[in-house]
Length: 489
Image 1 (spheres, rainbow, N blue to C red):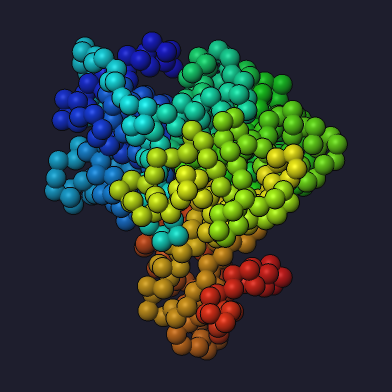
Image 2: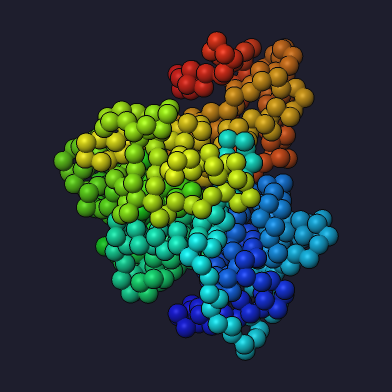
């Protein structure tokens, strides 16, 4: 356990140690780790020295992590023991001056073993602070440039629109610190609250309930699938829910019936946010009071929404020509405001498309009602959100199409009671499959092929073998028709 003085002490000395390793302001530091207390000091150590933190999904495949390392041109890697072998392989293969240290090991302790502490580096508000790698329609991860000003605006929005935080409050980091939960470190630091990292480094309902016994007025960020697991946990009946202040959910669809069940089990402790890496955790929000009122009044339309625009942000619905559509019309969700990214790292073309006309084009289809509440209808990019993790079909399709026995493939999401959605691949083989045994062998081969190329959580959970894919007159695969067919099968 560290107090704020210890956090400042360790962050400053980590900054100095990385400077001694040759890093200068603006250099990128890759973080590859499950949740651990060192993650928090690593973030602030980077910012103390003016470095750019590059938090990476710890579950990425080695090839995916290699792309993040190369694209960010990171000069140093801080990691946990689970990533030690992978990081060593990547650093060795590059044959260049990339430093690395494992949290808790001698190399990491050496970075902090200095009495000197540099002054906090002055940085421009628009300088990059965090590179958030998110896949796009091309399937290659793009680095979202989140500036210091973006993080400051995100922090202010959380405290004004999502939840008030006071000294002594706590956030339990059960969701990955490399993503949303890590961003919520900032508003809790800003208010002198406690950042609690479960010993498991992840999400276990019983562990969360036990931590509530120690930390009063606790909050956690959770994907809807995590909320469902909390509600379904047998030990919930004995949990000290009076010590749980709020669960902020986001990162995937929360179905109306699931929300009602969670409210019945947890009471008025639910708040919702909608955001993207390109506007981190900050587009719309629905606080506890508004969500509770919607449920108590039986307003299913309001429950199904993702709330209204957060402070200082403009949200509008646009047609194909980017013209604003009236309330009630479905179109693409566009966002403008101080939380919107600076652009994509070293990708001017993608930045120009995403920020055309000064508005972030989210790729999500939605509708805004007369009161300003946004309801998401579909995703232009066909994003699949499984267990809170973003999975882009194009990326999985490209991997499957690299298999010599695959002629065509379409990857879609199918509703899953626990994970929100699961990945399903509809595959056209190059040669007809003779029987069930040959089909099973084919599917096992595809599964092995995916595991060799992408993270385990991205691989299809089911394969549907078909003779042809449904297409329109221009040859585009009709994924909506596939979803309907799979859902009814």
